Amino acid sequence: MKKIAILTSGGDAPGMNAALRAAVRSAIYYGMEVYGIERGYEGLIDGDIRQMDVSSVGDIMHRGGTILGTARSERFMTQEGQKRAVGMLENFEIEGLVVIGGDGSLRGGLELSKKGVRVMGIPGTIDNDLAYTDFTIGFDTAVNTVLGAISNIRDTSSAHERSTVIEVMGRRCGDIALYAGLTGGAETILIPEIPVDINALCRKVIQGRNRGKKHNLIIKAEGVNISSQELAAVIGERTGVDTKIVVLGYIQRGGSPTARDRMLASRMASKAVELLKDDSLSKAIGISGDCIVEYDLEEALHMGREFETDIMKLADILSI
Ligand code: F6P
Image (tube, rainbow, N blue to C red; front, side, top):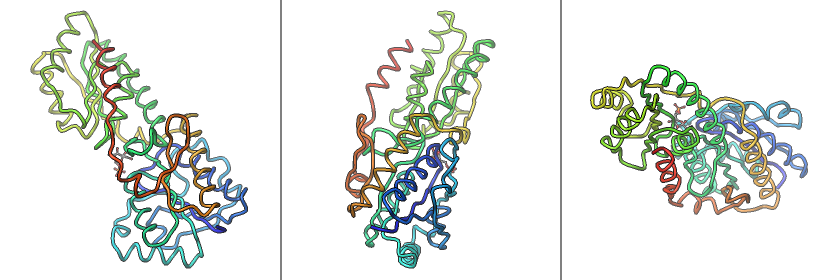
């Protein structure tokens, strides 16, 4: 394979630039021509495609966001949009495509692969919601960002003897809440995978106060089926403890990637390019233990997610 292209799609994630850098430089190292597509599938449909060289990815490893830009493309959801995208790759004689993004973006890649394009999917999303890989690029940075926020909120929460609901991202997957909650020493973690037990939560607030605890932190993923406002109101009414809400929002998506995310991005992207060099069929790149692994793209996207009950149990034990 001589000509490949790269795009970033969906919600941006810290480490996407590190992945882009590794893909571009690996491709050049192996003697391939490499193109960057702007604004994900939107730019592909519009032909916003430019050749990348070694210096076009210089000085970006440490930056959050994505220098290619990203989008959630409505047009690409249609057959017509996908046809145009394939045609555009043909116009540029691009034989292989690296897609860096979350579940929806990799599913978009799968549609292209069904139309004859060789696609390598790299999991780039803070949500860590792809079943086939232990971790996605950006997740570690997001967890560390939340951890910083938890420390600050704990200070003021203790000073005022308040309870605080901290809402983090994660519509279907509670991993950010779970990992940040455990490592941040939260009293309660609420995730979409487990129904909310209001009685247990309120009991913990009261027991903590009776033991002289000054703060009570509840980390709640956004996908939990009770709003943070409603939850804070119920806790306040049932326990008498003043309860505040902090919604962390997009702060979790930005920032300089951690060493762990940079390493993951570099290893996965380089692997994707090696596979294209060797004319591999479409794959999803992931990590299992400390090994970079690849699966058939379609099979990877059909794998079911197993929720890490042991981590939740540990968080429960440690927050008694
Ligand atoms: O990137 C994933 C994610 O951050 C989700 O957790 C969140 O709900 C969603 O993206 C919001 O993204 P946007 O508002 O950009 O569509």
